Structures are given as C-alpha cells and as structure tokens.
Image: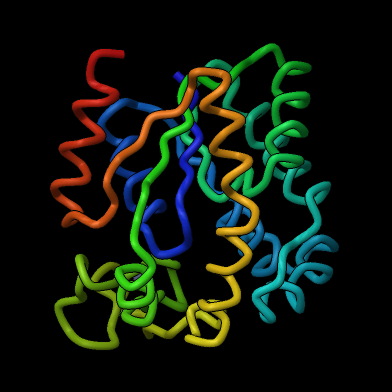
Length: 213
Ligand SMILES: [Zn+2]
C-alpha cells in the first residue's frame, strides 16, 4: 500500500506518517526530512536548498522529486507513506509520471483537514531537536522543557515555524492545494480525516480508514 498524506503545515503529518509506518509496516518518506538530510550532510543539493528553506520558500520540484525517486528505489517493494510532496497539481502529475516509470502507484491520498487557527496554535508551539531532529509540540511535550527526551539535545524553533513564515506557508498552501485535492478526488483516491481532533483521535480515524486495506 502506497499513501500520500495531504494537509497544511502543522497538521501533524509527520507524526501521523510515523503512526502509519509503525502500524501498517510502511516506510515514511518525508520530503522535508530528505531535504534537511542533504543540508546536514552539506551535499551539493543541501548547499543549494539551505537558503531557500531558511526563507520558508519552496524548493524546486526537480530536486525534491530526485530525492524521492532515490528513496522509492531503495525501498523496492515496501509500501510507503509520502509526506510533504506533492503540494500542487503539477507536482502530483510529475510524481505520477515518476511512479509509473517505477511501475508503482498511489493507493490512497489521505487528507488531514484542519482549521487555520488550530494550525497556527500548533505550529507556534512546535520545537525540534538540534541533534536527532525529533519534533515536539502541543500533543508531544518533552519531559524537561527545551531538552530532547531521546538524546538530551537542545530544542529549537524552526525558521519556517516563525509566525510571519507560517502565514506565508498557509497562504501558499491554500492557493495550491485545492486543485490537488480535486485531482485525487477525481481518481477516487481521496480520503479525508478531521485534523482538528486530538492526535489520539486522529490515529483512531486513520486506523478505521486504512485498517481494512
Ligand atoms: Zn534529540
């Protein structure tokens, strides 16, 4: 089973993807993580995308698609849950083309539908570990404030979670996502979950939706 997760920033897509990974044995592919990995390892791609990401702008499609293709090939027959890509109709078509070449397809586009005020509240509470990358927020708090439970690393606010950047990201998201939602609806792949609920309830919703697959 191959799944695409759709939803604005701050809907807990990463956490939901991890839940799906654990529960259904799929592998999470996060375009954000793939990019951050490149930045951390100071690869050619990493150096190119670092300033773009710092400004909260969008990294060129070809770069993200290249990283996703590599990952999909690595995974072979293992199913995946893709988070962070596609973000618009053009990217969805590019992704479909690429997957077709790899002889695989998307089974479900899972939309996490969330209100704007809920998103802003969640994102401005979000902190990430500088060392291991673990993300904390309203639903997942560290034992000790500012310190990672996993590795003791320092927690920081990501550049793209600053309020002025959040507003820009949400605006971009809203403009670009509706055609994408329609695209998967037309292909009868779209399923929606109410993202305004508590994380545990969202997990229950995901189980009900995917459980019989
Ligand atoms: Zn950590």
